[in-house]
Length: 315
Image (tube, rainbow, N blue to C red; front, side, top):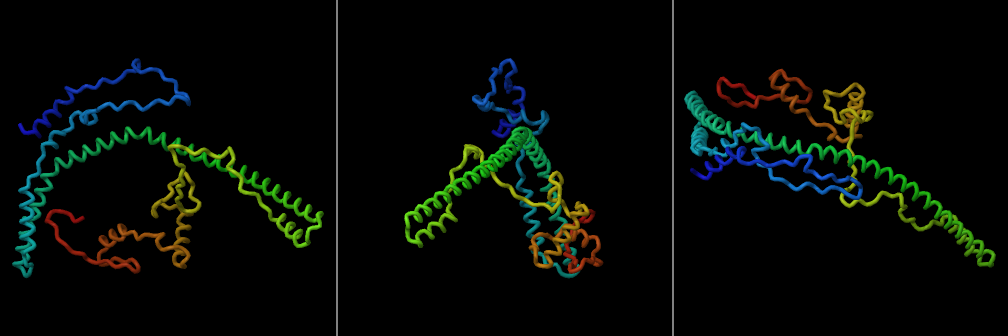
């Protein structure tokens, strides 16, 4: 047997041979979850690939698949021959039709050859990705929920700290002006030159203290988490629990009115034209359906041409 056959046979027998004992509730020690004791992540246990796939998953078929290079050679030869033809007149059209038929047959053979392994590979990808998403779901939900709480509480503490700093700075500035006023009065009583006294009085009016230090109410610096901003936008007046970036077809009447006003702003040069993108998918469908009768102001339809095998629909 080849190494590939041996690997496939091992995988087929893997379910029966490999059993990983899972710990029961009686085996788990009771650990109090207190702020001073956070449980360490559990040690990673090996899990065989076949254990996260359906029991009847045809993985050995995928492993044994070897592409038939003769199919590629045949398609390449058919393509070279077709490209070498001079398509002119009735005979040229007939010859080109025959060459295209052979070329399409070669292409179809490749598609059919890869169909089963590609389907298995796609199912394998979906299965593994689904298991990954399932394993991540709880942690992602917790990360989002706790992260939001951290963001909200950080903003709350920052607002309190900013207000406290403002009051402390205001008190310090008032004290600085009071001290400057005392110096001006002392200079006046000491019969200092009038210019000096006037200068001290002027300074007392605008005196400010040095910036105060951060108050104790400021949010702490976190070792493993960064609080970030995430600005985005929506149509003015859209409720926060609604779709924030709705498609044109889904706009309600107030949203539609505001979008039309935005279009007016673009025309008047008050907003960038990049606020809007052309709906090419819609326009292409209209052109395909209407053909020569296509009628959209400042747009035009044209026939791009092409060929397809008889009995198939064009995309």
